[in-house]
Picture 1 (spheres, helix red, strand yellow):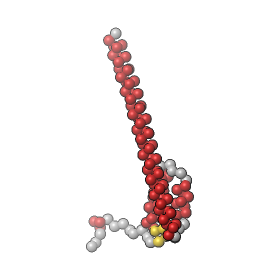
Picture 2 (cartoon, one colour):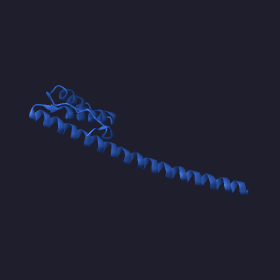
Picture 3 (cartoon, rainbow, N blue to C red):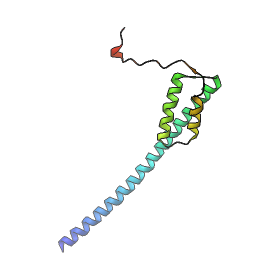
Length: 111
């Protein structure tokens, strides 16, 4: 009899805990989805802004293009739309000014 009561209580606790954890997981997924959506929107706006500035002046700098391409890669990883791929493709056909300086770690810098 006592074991039946304990089993029933254990089942009730486990069922309640599973329900609670399920709701928590659902809330976490919703928040995660919102964060991903916000990040995707920020990346898209940033890419479009850089692209429009470059088109307006008639060229893109090597650093801007490198950054735009890296942002577009991240945007694709976040399952962004193909609009950014179209922008990236066109940005890579613009006249490129300048170059990307080689990185030298401060400890290796002579001077």
